[in-house]
Amino acid sequence: MFIQHSPPDSAFGRACDPDWWITGEVQLLREIDHDLKVLAWQRTSDAQLRPESQREYPERLPLSAAEVKAAKAKAPLIPSPLPIAEMAKWLGWTKPDDVKEE
Image 1 (cartoon, rainbow, N blue to C red):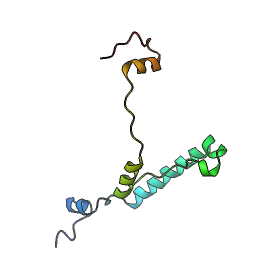
Image 2: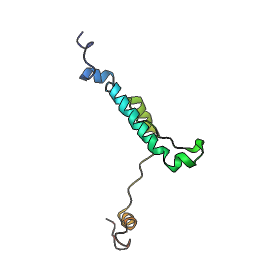
Image 3: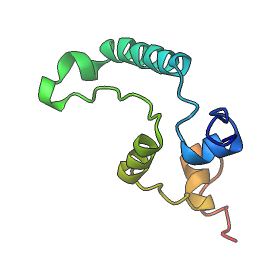
Image 4: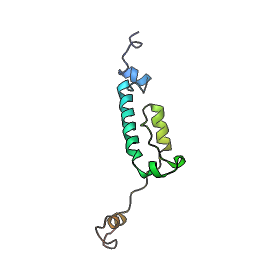
């Protein structure tokens, strides 16, 4: 009986519904964030010069557990870090011959 009427932010409520925290305020903030991204994107050359089929329109932030899982699945792989010598060369700190790899 008590479990049936427990609040959504209780431990039981969070275990039963992982999306308990998505409220109207959170959805409103998500839409504001997306609208600001679209407004900034509209001023870029991607929005103005590319054909409509090739434009990279900003996406909304994933909210629900299913959306987060889908976004992680299609996210690109994280590249490996640069070696120290290559990073020093890229930053222009030293000549690549002066830096020794560890």
